[in-house]
Image 1 (cartoon, rainbow, N blue to C red):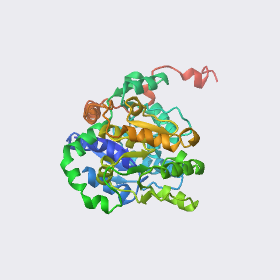
Image 2 (image 1 turned 180 degrees about the vertical axis):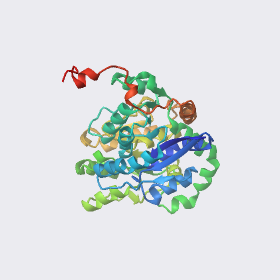
Image 3 (image 1 turned 90 degrees about the vertical axis):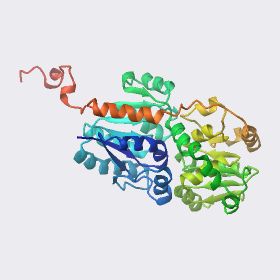
Image 4 (image 1 turned 60 degrees about the vertical axis):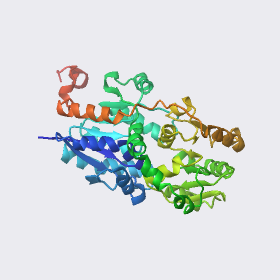
Length: 394
C-alpha cells in the first residue's frame, strides 16, 4: 500500500524548482504524493501557466491562503494547512524555499509530522529580509534538510543543526533548465521569431529584462525610486514583467516610470525564458533569476544589498546594485560592468544536473524504509520527569 507524502508549495519559483521532483515522486507507485498549493500566488499568469509550461499536473489541494500582508498569508497558511495535514496524516510534510508558505511548517510541527526542507541552510545574514527569518525557522524545525552546497551545510552546522540531518544535493535549477530549455532549445528558438520581439516593442539582443518584487525594494519608496532612476539610465529598453503588487505600489505612490521601461503583467515560464536568453542581460532582485542567468550564460545585475546565492558572484556572471546606497553605484559604471559580461563565458558551479533525482531518491528511500518517524514522548530517552514533577513527595 502506498504511503502518503505531502509537498507544499506556494509561489511560481517553487514550481520551477520542484517541477522534476514532483514528476519523479508521482511516478513512483509506492508514493501517494499529495501536492498542496498554499495560494500565495493565485492568478493564472502567476500560477497555472507555470504548471502548463513545465508540464506539472495541477495541485491535489488548494488552500486559498491569500492576504494583504506577510502576517495575513503566513497565518492563513498555518490555519488552513493544519486540518488538511491532520486528516491526511502523511509520513512527512515537504516544503521548498523561504517564503510565507514555508511557515506552514509550524502546522506540521504542531501535529508532530516530520518536516523536510528543500533549499535549506541558505543564509544572507541580512535580518531585514523576511526570507532570512523563514528559512532559519524551518531549518531548525526540519527533520531532513536538503542543502544545495557543502558551504550551505557548513552554515547550518555552525548554527547547531545536526550534520546527519543535512543532505547536500546540488541545485535543481540546473536540472530544470537542462530539461526544459537545453533539451528543447529548438522550440525556444522557434518562439523567438521577429513577431515575438516586434509585438513587445523590443529588438533581439538590444534590451534588458527586469524583475523587481522584494519587500526591501518595493516596500521602501526611497529604494524603489533609486531602482527606477537606475533603470532609466540603462541606455536601452527595459522590458519589465512586473508583479501586481509592484505595479500597485508604483501607481499608488504616483511614481514616474522611465520612458525606456516597458511595464507588462507577469508572464509565463516559456515566455520569460525567451525574453531572458535573447536579452542583453537581466536586472533583477530575484534569487532564482540570477541562478537561471548564471546557467544560461546571460549577464545579470542583482538589485540587492545582500544575497544568499554568492556563487553567481564567484563565477562573475553577476554584478551588484544596492538601492539603499545608490550613490555608491553610479548607473554609467553599473551598466558598463553589465555590458562587459555580454558574450563572456563562465562555468557555473550550481550543480551537475542530477539534483532533482538525488532529492527524489532520498525522499522515496526514507518513505519506503519507514525512516520518517512521527515525534512522540517516547522519542525522548532522557528521564527528565523529576525536573518537571518534583521529588514525588507532594
